[in-house]
Amino acid sequence: MPRIKIVTDTTADLSKDLYEKCDCEVLPLLVTINEKSYKDTVELSTAELYQIMDETKQLPKTSAVSPEAFLEVFTKIKAQGYDGIIVTGIGSNMSSTMQSAHIAMAQMDGFPIRIVDSLSLSSGTGLLILYGREYLNQGHTLDETADYMISLVPKVRAQFIVESLDIIYRGGRISSAKYLFGKMLKAHPFIQMNEAKLVVTDTPKGKIHRALDRLFDVFVEDFNQGIDQTHVFITHSEAPDFASYYLEKLKAYIPEKNIHITGAGAVISAHCGPGTIGILYVKK
Image 1 (cartoon, rainbow, N blue to C red):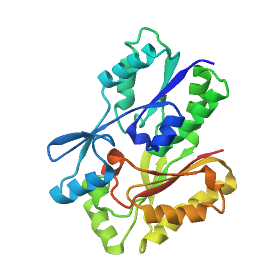
Image 2: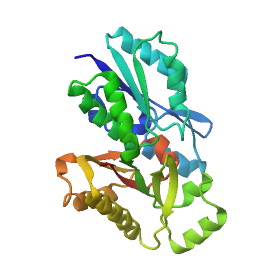
Image 3: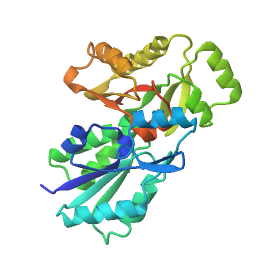
């Protein structure tokens, strides 16, 4: 069976064990704050990022993986005797990371590489990686697997509850009027990836658990219509209590061994803030 490497970036928000299980090479995006740049998850954890943000009152900036970084990794993987590479990562709608991968691929002299644009983020990308590796392990070719992963892209449900409006307001995602009105009513944005765009689809008001339950209601609706139960993610940004809350509720629907709890890295967290949490899965 051909040896195929999966290359992704740190925004896929998988655990170390899952990256290793999927034989992934993981490239870090960059986070810049207080005039210093850090490699996501390698040099800066989410908790450390929030500490710096609290101390400096600054909003971080994030930047894509460079073509040079991709080329270095592609060259190394080829030298290791792999037969090809599948690349996926944060969607081209949100970062130039996939563009960098295309630039590097063009310099690989025909070495087999396929790029799968997730059009998603966080463990929405992670789902493609898991399903892709399992498909490869069934004996499918590089091209068959890349095409399969592409077919899953529109079926991935990536959705999150944001506990605080502060960071998405400072990042320009909502207006001043909506921010002030939302703060007054204790609104918690419900953000979904719809047609390759992050969209605030609802703003449950009041206690945070009202918002958490709103997202869970959407999960139940999708579950009743049909989801793939092989992998369901709870992904959060420094919100372990919320993750435990969802785990207990999900166990009534999904075998616990199929539920993955992962933490969002510094890049994803820089744009949403602490207390953000999502349930992510693939619809049938």
